[in-house]
Image 1 (cartoon, helix red, strand yellow):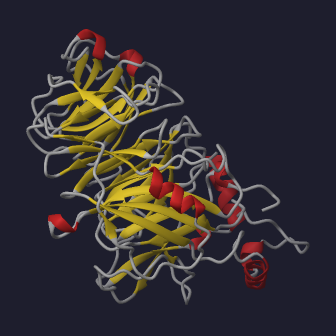
Image 2 (cartoon, one colour; image 1 turned 30 degrees about the vertical axis):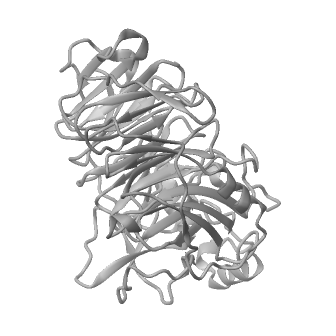
Length: 480
């Protein structure tokens, strides 16, 4: 399959005021024809902004809830393990980055009526041998007959809010018990919360009206409030194999292991794991080994730890020439570890090729320098072993398929069918599958583990829910 990057369009428009809550919104079609903007080829003129072309998506919705969100997580639900039919319902937990520390809160969301439609990668030919892409009436008829599968374009947003002391640096829901969530606060505390009552209330609610005002903030005591870190941090991860097991890392260099003692209490080992010489930025448990986890640091290294072998790394190696901001362990191909760097590069490593030589980089199987600003989030797909998504401070969210290779013959055939001239740079990586823009200051993204092809992302100006049309697994069934 040849790479097919999504089109972007440039448009002059007035900037919206920030900081207000207007309820959820949905992307709409541009009011007049605009030219296609190509990443790496075109430059924006002064006063111009990019607007995504909805035809590049099976589903695209946006919403914002007031204060920016640094971190969020998708909550595993009981609606089905693999869901492909629109409309979708998504549960999220997130934390705020408010101007005043006392104004921060944790949001528990239910986003329902996430609508979308089935789209074809290549326009079909009609009886006259002409492409449907050239027939304006065909597009309008299709839009009127099949405007959005499953209802109106605007999703319904319902939310509960819980007070949180300080900015939420990171939030993660436990894999086995999603109502249990952990948060890192910029006050230096790591807390564990039980949000079962809020999630149950949202699940039982039948209200479909668009929320006009944010709900009140309620006070709730955390199950655990750990103050043993000497500084704030961002790194936290639940084990996907051992329920309740967790690690947290701080901006000094310490990592603490959490072990559950009951359904509502934990024992936190006061003696930290030490191996990095600077801030621990991210943590990831092995998807196949109970006692193995990985960490990355501002010191440019990645470490692999075995909790049975003491508090020093089993192996530590130089991964990048700058801060390593994020890592992701592939759950479908457990030998693959992805890492994103502050210089905009990201790498894929085969852990079977690791050497005891700290400076030996023979484990790198792919390295990309497409992004030119810091990588802020990276995550492997839950449904395609070769696919991962990356967000960057350059305001781009990119999707990559490492199984793709350049096929000039197939690209020529695609261009002929679409009757389109694609003047992409010759050095554009063939693995680049999709480029999503429109959000400012992207912070974090997650694939939905139960809805193939769905990605949720957060940025300074709110959330996006997107399903690109050129990812085959996102296509709903014929009956939807």
